[in-house]
Length: 231
Image 1 (spheres, one colour):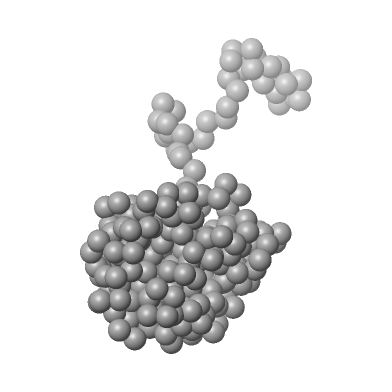
Image 2 (tube, rainbow, N blue to C red):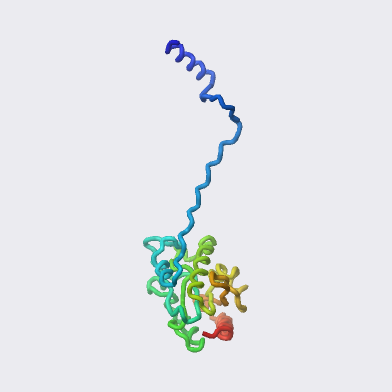
């Protein structure tokens, strides 16, 4: 069979519209194309199981929401053995500049709130952020909130406080499932890896500065905390 004949045959089939070689096995040409398989999710690395290692992880881990090489972090401070853990949502712009949570005017009000609680100071509580990294928007989206809540429950489990005080809507929604307005005024059992921890929700100091009329409400929350918690 000459090459000219083969070329002529191929040309004829091409003109006839045949552009695919069909094998001997039957095939359903009308079937939809198979969907590409979804990539397998890579599980997140486990969080450290000691408080010292976990605090270092908060300072350095690239796996935290909002983490980037240039994003500053403000970690927890105070005494983990105090029995009282206080959680805020994230560092403010002032906090990032000062290198500590609740700085500036909000921090001064927070110090007065602590002093009203039987003369406490920052050294007599354990103050921690829900997120040690400030987001670009200053807010926490729902997906990040879910991840941060898991991290916070692990953190609380390592500290094992007798009580937890949550400041503001972001912390309340992430950890007890509802905003301050619906969560304050009663104790919650916050589930952690070591079991439920008694938790109260109150108004964040920044909001009290802008709405001083709410200070009476916040003071009622602090009184409930003092009545239900003894170190």
